[in-house]
Image 1 (cartoon, rainbow, N blue to C red):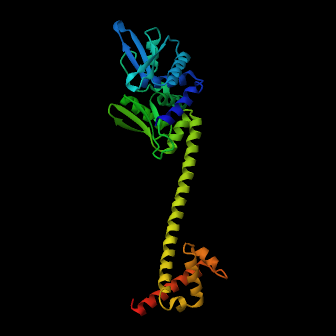
Image 2 (tube, rainbow, N blue to C red):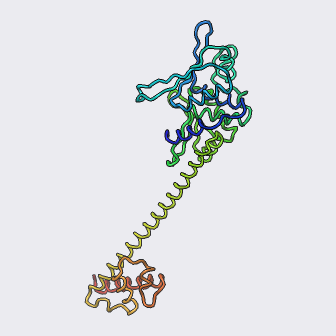
Image 3 (cartoon, helix red, strand yellow):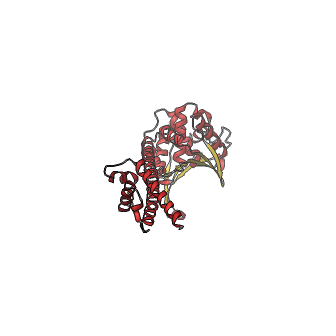
Length: 319
């Protein structure tokens, strides 16, 4: 799933930030809900860290922070030894004035400092904010199958059941029939309907990815149609060749008898000899070899009569 997911993610992180600050906060909130961790120290000191394996998501998060809250932050780059020394980017926002207000605004904590797992409804009142929230959710925890595959699937992962339920409700408000499944300690909000996947990508602003997705779908559809036609033509050809071989065997058997093909009327003898000369010809081709040419049905009728002569001869000879 990762290759096409990364194409979508790269497009999103390079897109312009939303014009309205409320939409910027909605996108930021989704990212922090999935990738963020709150740290409580002594004397009610509070800090926030946001960890991601994608440099573009880290840069996007910094941009969203600067556009919505004037807070100091630091980016640390680490290597994950367990994942082949892949880089992880950790954005650290230390304890400072305004941090607690931001966390409350974004729905991660109530004003009495109780941790919150759901989505703050004030952040997603308008459709533009809802789509911004979905964009942030996909950036932080989303993936989508490669459109070359037939089992279309888009999912977003979270550790919070409340957040997953809120996300499904939000997506249903936008006409997306999302569902939830549980995998170990994670909740997966997913879409499998192809039209819903395309609508989701359009809503979050991944328009280039939508075009690529549609292009691949068209090519896949054409390829499947060509394969179906080839299979149909191959089956017909095999059927035609099988029938032709049976006709040749019957004519050869009749020819091997003492009277040979002379027992056939002239017109049937002409068709029999042409079938022996062109054993792999279709009925249409065989009809054209006659002088004058015949119709397919006429040739088919003659071949049936030849078969009857063969059966009659066999019965009379006691074979």
